[in-house]
Image 1: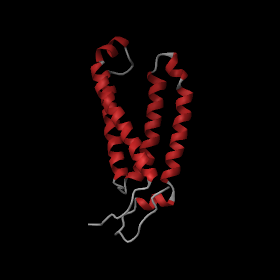
Image 2 (image 1 turned 30 degrees about the horizontal axis):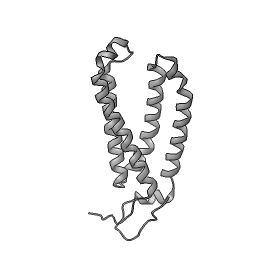
Image 3 (image 1 turned 180 degrees about the vertical axis):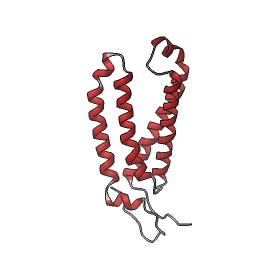
Image 4 (image 1 turned 90 degrees about the vertical axis):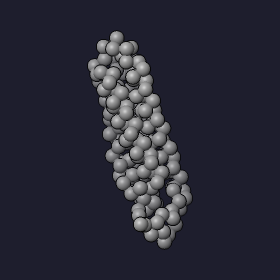
Length: 149
């Protein structure tokens, strides 16, 4: 078994914490969707409350897995984050476009799109740095990596 004597870069720690928070938010969304299913039924939404709860659950598990992989510097976590982040952003924005009925939610869409682009740019910038790539490589513990980005 290969040994890991590396320190996690602080930027990866922050990304892992962010992925964990997104996961918790989605898992809380499962509970919220189930508790408010009678309210959702009265609203005549385009999708069923069960589907909303299921999607929250799926994203909660995906983000929790990503957070764990980032925290443990698993080699698969870096490319996974680079795939999951834009897919989640498109899903989240698409949910607002296709499911939002009120003008208030549609009015927030440009702000949400800009924020998503900025956050994705930050994620891609951090995760493509050579020192960050090196942190996710499997090594035999013969070198240390810098602590900062």
